[in-house]
Length: 390
Ligand code: NAD
Ligand code: GLY
Image (spheres, rainbow, N blue to C red):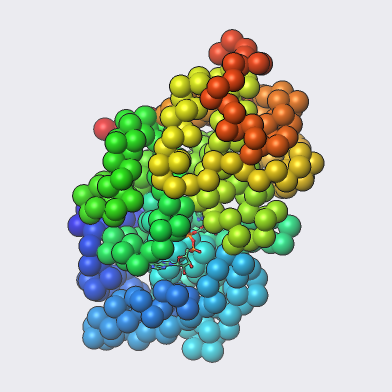
């Protein structure tokens, strides 16, 4: 087992990464204020892993309340959130009851928001069981639900007490979900860790084959990157926005296609290629780098062609993004592999070109000369990535 720390003063916590962690109650017990936990999970994960984590806790004298929700992004909403509150109240849970999220990012975001708001806040533990949730959503304290008008629009920053990323759980993950998680792994390389990106290019077959050494390294390095960024900018006043590479486009795709039709990681991959398209039009990204980006997403079995929603629909949905300031859509753009910036200083006409028939444009990018290339001097409104230290 390897352990990392998210350093946030009194809200600091460990991230344990390894095999067989669900059956190690000693990793959970020290964090309980009362020997009562509510385990929030779903109908897919419960038959696979609920007893694995619950039985050893019960043996240690912990009272376990299972809360089993319907499965899917379409259920990440206020109605499902209410089911959690109902169960917590029916079971007379108290301020010292710990909520444990057992599942992917949907369960983590829902359970975390319930923990943040039930009785104005109860302790919370993340036990992520998808690759995406192990490398991203379980770390950093973003919790929340979707609104019909926009993705993740209601939520809270609420840090867990501990994160247990048990690699064994990935063995039951469908291939498509594994690939969706790889989109967020690739993201860290692209925004701030070029050496990690280089490593991924070589090790993608091992990651797809779930080889333990490669997967452990990918999860550790991803969490290390995320912990560093979150430690410096917990509430996204600057650098943390870089973690949203591809997300402004991606959230628009998720919403427009219907929550759950495109997986979050798939939408992020196609959205990242739209960000790359715009970066290329701005003259910030070379043809070689964009080719490497296309190649790695394809190697991870991810879509690179965003749906053609129409420019107006894209702009309408992107205008709801949480990074919008004074009506301007700020985007995470690429200056190369391992270097991202947050900027609203782009020509809106170029963004419209990117959004016009994106599925045709992205694929054509590699062969086309830079029609709008400008000297490399982006004006950046927010921040640059700082690469992984140590
Ligand atoms: P998910 O939670 O929907 O899980 C994907 C599917 O895999 C589900 O059907 C789930 O039941 C199933 N599953 C989970 N673990 C399994 C296992 N071990 N074996 C078999 N099946 C398993 O999707 P996700 O990709 O984990 O998370 C996506 C969500 O995370 C989105 O809602 C996204 O907005 C959110 N997210 C949040 C953050 C954050 O910082 N809070 C970051 C990134 C993404
Ligand atoms: N997934 C983006 C963030 O946690 O900030």
